[in-house]
Length: 195
Ligand code: GTP
Ligand code: MG
Image (tube, rainbow, N blue to C red; front, side):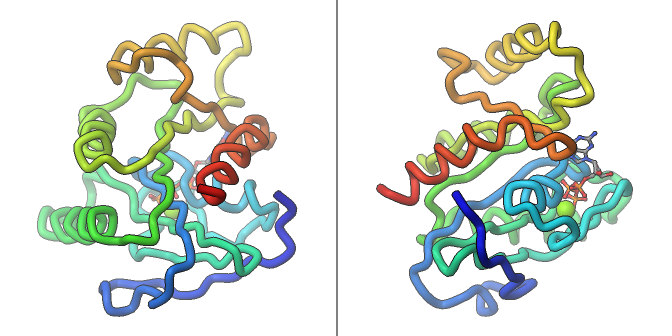
């Protein structure tokens, strides 16, 4: 996809701030620091549109990005960041859950996980949640540039096994440093938008 236009529509903290229209949304989820905001920037080739940080917990609101007046990327606060208070964590959790379960605009949920590590318990729970809620999703393994090419298949099979996937077909890999993997992910996004 050629991105000609990208802008932040709103940083929402409450459902009544979500855009009221039927524009399709591609939502991101994943633990803090996994690279959700960096993913958006690389996909649309706008360095710095989505704010990123080496410190986890950077994104704390639901950020809706209008792409080409065609669809929205929705950047979601990360889960599993231990340094926020328990009540904050619960609040983030319920905000994300409410959005994912009730938002009719969602066409695809991208579950981002760090390719270097095994999935965390929360990653596995997130995948099971998407299965149960019957939301179309794909798993994007981030930070591809941090592993050796020769290790890729090993990491893919770890994820296939831990997430109990029948094949590696639901697994995509991606680097926001190099852009590798972005074309395959654009393909699934475009397929979902065309449905
Ligand atoms: P929260 O907003 O806290 O939930 O984090 P996030 O998932 O949005 O992560 P963010 O995009 O802010 O990236 C976190 C850190 O990881 C930053 O220092 C990024 O530069 C780095 N990072 C993200 N993606 C990649 C990648 O593909 N490769 C490498 N090497 N670093 C990455
Ligand atoms: Mg972020």
